[in-house]
Image: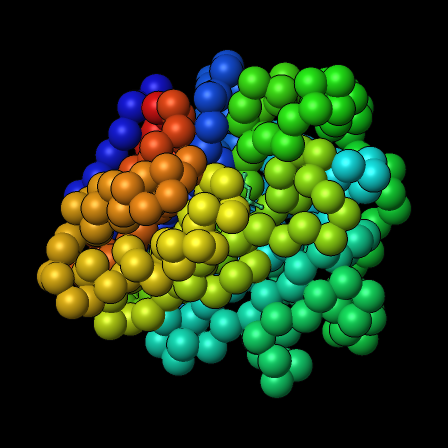
Length: 309
Ligand code: ASP
């Protein structure tokens, strides 16, 4: 398994996904899913799909996979419930959509897309977001679909240790993470999407960075597409996704340097924990994290590469 990759995609499109940051035990476990999902997204982009469609497609597949902390298999909050957050941004138009604290919606990333395209708003939360999802005829699932045994055990452990934790952390025996995708399509348009169940044992009603445009997700054709993972409060307080895009737009950094600089900034300002992935306007990849590890995969030189640190 490759450790990391940065630089150019060597195709006329770029696609990178992540499966969260933290202390990742047993990283091999996530490789096959990450590889299959990046390959699936790359097939769409190769066939001419937009970056926007590709990132929503990849994040929805990650949500359906119980290994990751999003959609099915998302972490449980302090009341034992799964409440999900997601967002999407179109770098071509700067349109954005997001949903927070939603229950039972199978693919929160698809709801974020519907909010962007059909609500006239950027962010819908809770019951209103769920009603809107019904109106848009999105798929709903039962509580059992979302709650895996692993997550129930993880919450019990967190409660014993009185911890509120990132999925990939000491309290998380399953070690799964928030998910995201960034892409540049054959037209040169950029898009980003992020989805999460939040952090283990979070207060009911807590919302992290993942549905906050500029914190957990950002895309602008003038700079880059960014998706973040980590302690959401740290990313909100530093507007980290937007900060990374500023480094590219106004300091002319390539994606790799901007990713490293953004994490330096996160640590310097708030001692923040987490990571981010970037595809820049030239199609170059960047990734960096302040946590011990991060799960990523990208389409490089015509093949999917999984990166685990
Ligand atoms: N950023 C997410 C949140 O704070 C958690 C994660 O990335 O694992 O909700």
